[in-house]
Image (tube, rainbow, N blue to C red; front, side, top):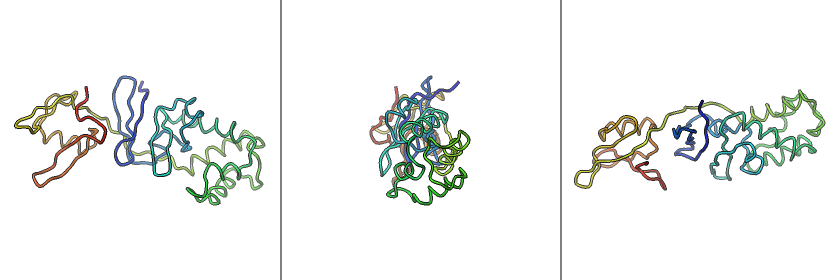
Length: 215
């Protein structure tokens, strides 16, 4: 069974997960909530950490927690609502949870009231069990949990050079491959590298802050 133990930001808003056997997977496309296994789009903090947060990714307006699976992210959302926000009203929760600097807060509030079927501004602790489930499920729906693509990442272990230029790459588990085939792997998102272009043709380089060769 695959268990993700680490996550980090990749290129173009993607997320790279490492599992308990050392294999790496690229989550791309879809929505941020799906890529992060974070259906409530929670920020990193004590609550996310006690629900197995395995990483965080930075965006223009802050950071989001990354969880090993959707259920962990859901548990963190439920925990947040039943502890930090339990004594607050639905509208008060959303003014803090989805501030107007980042969201259409009024639209968000109306969406929740309509989904829960509660017109009055009840506190979270006053919701029935059925209403509370509709509440957190509606947050997931509004935050948009839509799947993208999962790609297995391979690793470059060694390179061969001739006159200072790389002409061959050792990619586990395929062995030595040509520069052209390595480019094909890179262009289909199977390598954690950047594809660049020059007048003499395409080539690859390491992602900023990363090494091209993994040991």
